Length: 289
Image (cartoon, rainbow, N blue to C red):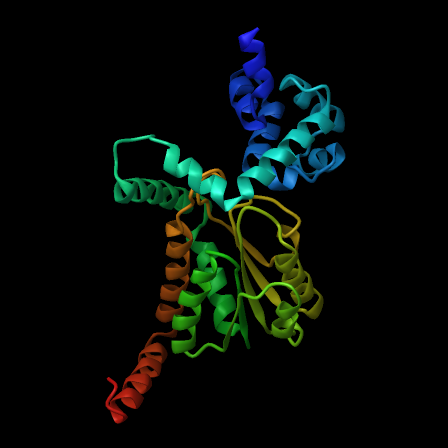
């Protein structure tokens, strides 16, 4: 009786992990997609999930039943409840505060997690992809940098260096109506770099859709491997930050931003040196060097 109660209370993620070893290859494909894209799956119909994973709708229904649900709607309803809970910042911080996974202190914990995500970054993003984004930055008339919440700090770093290197950069961290003040004049030849973690947002979708309609280019940097945003992006870079129920360090996305900045510096070469020399000369003129 107690075992049956624990099984009934298990989350979708826990059920997947419990059943994963006995799943078929097709079921594992569905399981991996659900684990990596829970916010998206929580809003998908069985047909939509079948389409994005290349499976049949009946396979999706059987997958839910394998996990102990009567059908896919029951699984999706529980997943929606779990995602809403996981999105609350207080819950994510509480998970970190109350967990005792290792004997490491805060610094050791963050370094270990960041190292793991940096290794994943090397597997998920290639040097060719970085070079392609650098080329997009170099040829852009204007660059829009968008992020909200904690990842907005990434746009501050990118704006600081790209502006110093002679790029025309606009940092956008507003949401709602104010967002459109920043993007309504974009056009062909412009570039938007969009940071979107954990879920698809209306603001990210608006930027990607508007840039696409105006003939601009877009780079999506996200921990979602597939979403409604991805088909709209010229280039998408996958960056993992950790599970949604925990505090999620920005070390891996920060490393990617640094790599793009370095790529622009190296590509500009002497032009970058001259640009920074002019800045130093101006500072020296006013005794601020």
